[in-house]
Every structure is written in structure tokens, then in C-alpha cells.
Figure 1 (cartoon, rainbow, N blue to C red):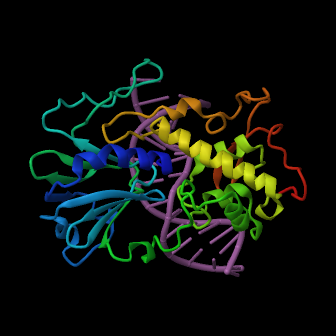
Figure 2 (figure 1 turned 90 degrees about the horizontal axis):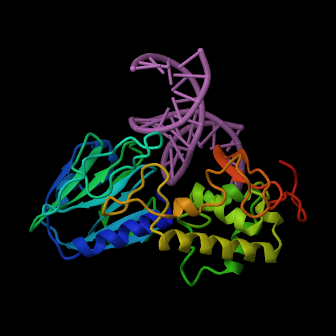
Figure 3 (figure 1 turned 45 degrees about the horizontal axis):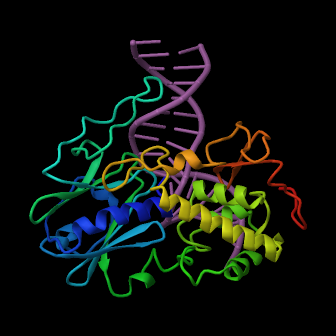
Length: 303
DNA sequence: AAGAAGTCCTGGGCGC
DNA sequence: TGCGCCCAGGACTTCT
């Protein structure tokens, strides 16, 4: 599931290849992905130069000349890749696990799940592939983008210097929801999803059902630090490839092998050896260590 | 107003 | 070998 580190990895891989290039033609084969656009639809992007690629939360913002920005959200299975006409295509997605074969690395030709192509001047194209179709495309005015729905309500960027432990504590202390729900709430802080929420809670020794209002200042500080560490590590290792995620070159990340909680239910905790438990919190699978992440620790209540 | 629940969608894993 | 069931989940909408 592309969260902040995966989206940032995609941005870093793609931006140098597309900045300063002109979009010649746009092909959108799944129109329902387009949630907002001028009257001309995505055709309005044709002929415009790409000025840069920014990230806000889990969104990618492709700034175009003439004051428009193509906003891309990868949903949970979105892949935004660069296709180079000079390179060979990989043979495809091979069966893995039982056979020991991996998904082949490298660029892939468009298939039935490729919903958007941006053909650039001079050859090459940006490809958007999204098997589960949870992604979203928007073509919006660049000016005031931060104040435009659905971006207006986003919380702070957890890796920005302005995001402090005190700031996180402030945001959590008025809330009675479970920590897990608060970390997933993009209005509380932006860019965290199920993987990094579980990792940060495990690293900070906090039970996912602890209520935000129950945190002592030092616990909020620990969570702040764990969160930033988990996100930074995710970026450093090129993201977590759990199901579909690949970077701009079509390659898998390396962080999935470093995860200590997410996806490890029933396996021993890497810190204390206790079997990790899985519970549901706000309809999301949540893995934690019943020993390292105790629900007590002050004023929390059983939920 | 915060919080809970329903919705979209398809590939993969599993049981039979 | 193959069918069908169920799960995974980001964020929007709807409801209490």
C-alpha cells in the first residue's frame, strides 16, 4: 500500500526523468479515476511542460506550465512508472512464492490494468497502473492547491521540521479514538497508513487501542520519534513492497523485509519473542506485541 | 463535531 | 486442477 515512503520513493525516481519535458498526448482508459478536471478533462494537460513533481501526504502533484497541477493518488495498488522506449520490457509478472520466482524487475508494457499514459515529447511515457482502481486523478489549478479539497483538511507532514513531538502530543491529547485510528487519520497527520502505523506503535511500545487522550508527554515523544524513524527507514530502503508497490523503474522496495509488526501476526516478536497478535481497529488489521505494547501504562481503558 | 460504519475493487490465498 | 469464498485497505460519504 503506497504510504508516505512509497510515494516519496516514486517521486524521487520519476521527477528527474520528467521535469522540463512536454506532455504531447494523454490517454485515460478508465475515466472514473478522474475525480476533478477543467471542462476539457485531462486533454487540458496536453501541450504543457512539466515543471516538477511534489509530494503532499500520499498525493503526488505534477505541476504543469500554465497554472495546472495533475494530482495523482495511488490508492492501494497504484503504480506510477517511467517507460523508456530505449529499454527492453520485462517479460511480465511471474508466479512467485511456490516456484520461488519473483515478479520481474524493470519496466513493463501497458496491460489491462494500465489506466493512464502520458506521452512526453522526445519519447518515453509516464504509466499509471492500478489493478484495484482505488486511485484518483485530479487536474486542478496550481494556485491555492493546499486549500483545495481534498487537500485542505490534511494534517502536517510528519517529516517536516515544523512537526514536533509537542505538536503531535497536542493533536492527540484531545482525542478519545484509539491511537491506531488517529495515526491513520490524514487530518491528524498526513501520509501514514496501516504499515507505518503498526511499525511506529510497535517501536514505541504503545498499544494500538490506547486512547490519544491517555498519552503522557514522554509517550507522545516516543511515538513521534518512532514514527519518523519508521518513515525515514521506509524512504531509505525504497519503500515497502507488500503486494503491488514498485518504484518509478518498476522495481520493488526493500523495507518489507525489515518490518517488525505489519504482516507478522502469529510470528514471534523480534524484541521479546512473544507471539504477535492481530486485532481489528477501525476495520483495519492491526498487529502488535501483547507484551511490548501493553494496554496499561496509565489511564487507558479496555476497549 | 467526533466517531462509527458502509462503499468502491480485484488479485491472491485458502478450503474443499 | 479448479471453483468459490473471503480478505486486504485509502479515503470519501453517510449516519448517529
